[in-house]
Image 1 (cartoon, each protein chain N blue to C red):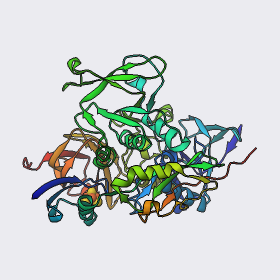
Image 2: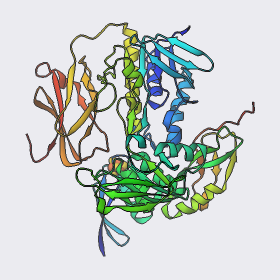
Image 3: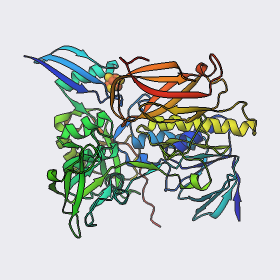
Image 4: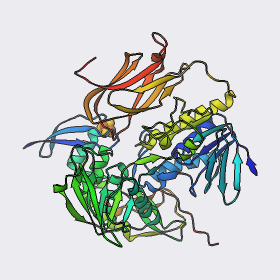
Length: 426
Length: 125
Ligand code: SF4
């Protein structure tokens, strides 16, 4: 069997994987190998031709491809090795990676550390169970985005979009600009799953209606989609049949959520969080398997690539430290972070205290709340709080808390993050 | 006539809600912005709304059929449809390098259409 050597293997060459590779290289790791399934580095960014990337990370507004090329150029400049069109087929419990590509055939690597950066995939119609026929013309929004932006053809002329996640909103504008009639965006929830700015610049700018609390209840057409029936839903998200209306269209785009791709993670026996569908990680982005780190959308679905890159860099830095320390592990136990009132999940889920200056927490709330404060409690006592005018499940929240709260006054063994009304106080 | 308007700032993902009070073309007060770029956005949004447009342009003899492009400056919102027509009329020969100008001073806006990706020439095997 073809056996390769590397200190650090990164599975996935998208924004998370590239940031991890670059940071590990900056921290002195020379023997890095990125394994990428597609034919180039950059991942999903190549089809995200709209702008709005990089405001946090580079302080300027870039399009997806421009953002990707900044990282690709740096990977090249640092001579980091990578294989494209390479699929990892097995990830063993002892960090053994089995992969395959047309040049090398089947090969095995047993690296000292691994970064999982496989990203996520779109939820499909099958996962949603829309009744009706199965005609052509139904795509996930991301697939349509690939057709239009990378292959240069339009999937249809009149479009209904189900789901108001960011890709759905962005595709509404894109299809409109390319001359399609975009009839409406339907959203099951009473709020959009996308960023506010995208509702303004993708829908309102072009008078595309957003139907909140609406869903598609039937699909019409034999060979090609001819229309859909939509209906309003009640508070239990059940369609109200009296509100049914039929909308003619030849294309239905689904933007109904993303799922982290964790088949390899599960196969390796790494613990996966049911709320995020990604591996449980500590503040070093290390998973439940020692020396295996994870970052980006494989951990939890982000709405900003800037945060993905930051998480990737953190994973790369910690993987480098792990390799350099050769198993010299930090003393002390882990602190669990609990998602408290109105918080769906936090990432990381654990902290390994070792005198860190700051800890960055990402989390999502369960509903829209206005005029609230985010409260962090250590062993039940409030140790940190931040006001927020508005928080919504569609926008990931980020919080930087000082590391000092972990050891004052006594050793902390549980942190809790919750949302409180400002008036309510304690 | 005094008119109150609520805008959502689209400059960054925070999406601040900005309240503007205007008296025809005179802006009386602006509040709610999280940073000064938001204030500038609110003023421009009322007086002359602009957008950066991204799209794709057909590539001849390239590894891909299309290259992503953008306006290198925001252009007036009312010109978007016309701009898309211009973009869809043109095509470019590979190789294309990021930053290459595809259309100069498009519609006299002072903005250029520039490539935002790299497309190498298709190698015939
Ligand atoms: S006002 Fe500033 S912080 Fe608020 S959305 Fe606009 S650019 Fe962002």
